[in-house]
Amino acid sequence: MKRPAGTGPLRRLLVLRHAKSAWPEGVEDRLRPLAPRGLRDAPAAGRALAAAGSLPDLALCSPAVRARRTWEAVCAEWATPPPVRYDPRLYAAGVPGLLEVVREVPAEVRTLLLIGHNPGLAELVPALAADGLDDTLERVRAKFPTSAIAVLTWHGTTWRALAPGTALLTSFTVPRGGRLGRGRPATD
Image (cartoon, rainbow, N blue to C red; front, side):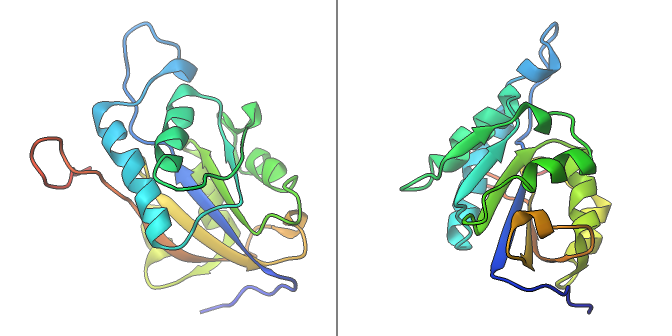
């Protein structure tokens, strides 16, 4: 396994794709709400981040309704949610646009949560990862479903230093909430 080079403190980028959204007829894409499964999965993502000790210092979120509602359900699972910034550049952004936003994060932020959309997030994670633990990188390349969380670590003095191939993908999970009234996990 290649280990990304870098100097400075350890930083973590938590990449979360919004939870499953609904497709109501006549509703503009940016205004689409979460589907019932998304309403179950988003809190599960918040619990998964808390259980992994991966709570962010700052969240950057797309202003699309489905991303905002995901963030609200995720952070409702934490005792003290961090500040959030809604950035319109995150909606429909590709890798260069996502990196531009991330690189503006203040240096004092050590763990950053990025909430957005595919295909941008599905392309960002493998672009940044020089390698991954276990089969994480292969799994991300195969599919980055709704509510998926990728954790990238790297060393850098500022977020400006984050570049393709400089991070290590340390985990990839897809939290699912239980089906209401049935007590078992939902499936993709």
